[in-house]
Amino acid sequence: MTNPQRFEAQRVAGIAQSDIRLMSRRCMEVGAVNLGQGICDQPTPDLVKEAAKAAIDADQSIYSKYEGIDPLRAAIARKMKSYNGIECDPDTDVMVSAGSTGAFVAAVLSFIEAGDEVILFSPFYGYHLNVLKLARPTIKHVTLRGDNWEFDPDELAAAFTSKTKAIIVNTPANPCGKVFTREELATIAGLCQEHDVLAITDEIYEYILYDDHEHVSLATLPGMADRTITISGFSKTYNMTGWRLGYSVAAQPLTARMGVVADLVYICPPTPLQHGVVAAFDLPASYYEQMSADYAAKRAMTMEACDAVGLRSLAPHGSYYLMVDVRDAGFTTDREAADVLLNHCGVAAVPGSSFYVDPKDGATQLRLCFAKQDHDLERACAGIRSLPDVMASR
Ligand code: GLN
Image (cartoon, rainbow, N blue to C red; front, side):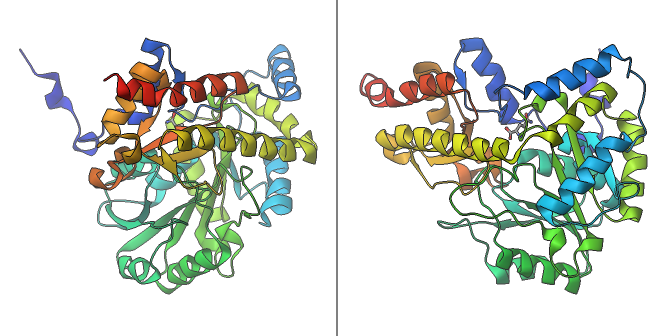
């Protein structure tokens, strides 16, 4: 008998299904409310759905250019200018991708290889780490700490070497909700220029901001336009995580490379859905204001429920995740807390250790996603509030 495992390529050794997906599967098995995976299961705007249906009816069913349909790239370029302050040419600098992950994979496969070093902040989004691993660079971790999840500028400077090829910047950040300030980005920009390093940003939560936090795109800082790949997407802003539509914006030579790679991996993003999402750019400013207000209310509801049972948290500045510490709720490990919440409170969450290279760093944390419809979030909060009774009866 042959052992099928012996066929496994080295590049995937040690890469397993993410805890994010694992918790979704377990959640479905027990019928809990999923505050684990950042699914964002609220309705997609009607005009986007109608436009996609019309595109299907009109037989917009064939491949698009690998970089995406022209009207969508034109709309993205306009948005990049008006929202992000990035000037780009829709014909050469914009690539529509299969989710923002599609653009991230294309960037990593195009520019990173064994022998390179890449800087990644912790806690990280595990997909950033694991996609990087496919390209086999050495990964240098810089930890975000304290009430504002800050990095130590000296630690960051020390992480840059002559081998550094790229730095990954996720703002607003998954899982900790950090929004990088202009000053922090200036520090990163200075180091990128000093060491001639590429910046790959993930700005998928760019519209989900709280209080007075401002989203700043690294590419707008002096000297960064030609060395930054700005990645974002439609999933989170328009509640369409399953449509798998994202995009990247970067200087023409970088975009051209990435386009060829994306073409090899999946040819093009789904054409009728690209036609549908063009309509999203017609949504009024009030759509985004309402979204922010709704998420602020969901953040408050979730934090209050957690606080009431000793799941201590720092208010995220952006994104829709809450990192809670489980110790005051009577737990010693994240996995124990995740199991009890899932099996006894009916709430799925992601163990914090999955967001750090050394699992010990997140071993008393859990990530909760509050991008849920209010009735589901209310049910989840009631489950969380039942935790003391569950603990008392254990
Ligand atoms: N970005 C979302 C999260 O962090 C979804 C990721 C995923 O399904 N892989 O939960």
